[in-house]
Length: 124
Image 1 (cartoon, rainbow, N blue to C red):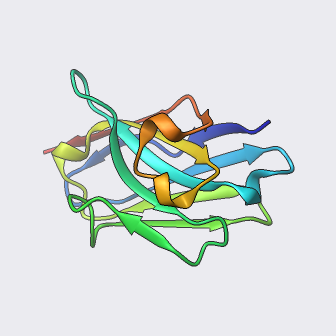
Image 2: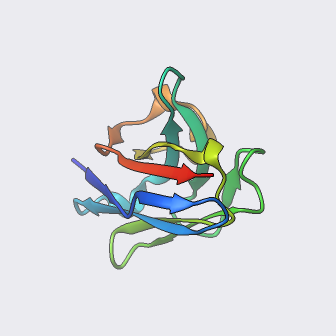
């Protein structure tokens, strides 16, 4: 069993930065790949980034490449999402999830666990 808790969201001006954290409980967290998704009002949940269990591999949605960086610290059971040069279209609730197979980590319906989400709002 893995429980995930996101934090670090808030209100930021366009061009600013945020670092989101996803803290996990459970001894098996390091055996899961982890992904970040976001969901804006009236839209479907959208893949943002994912990182392999070992932290050495990561990939991103085209819309965020060059601005978002995902990382993880397995010793702290935490995954991070650094967001730079923020845009109003980044406004959404951001969720982290845990998935056993890294290759499927862009598919929301393959995730075993989700956090409750953290709101990110970017003002223009």
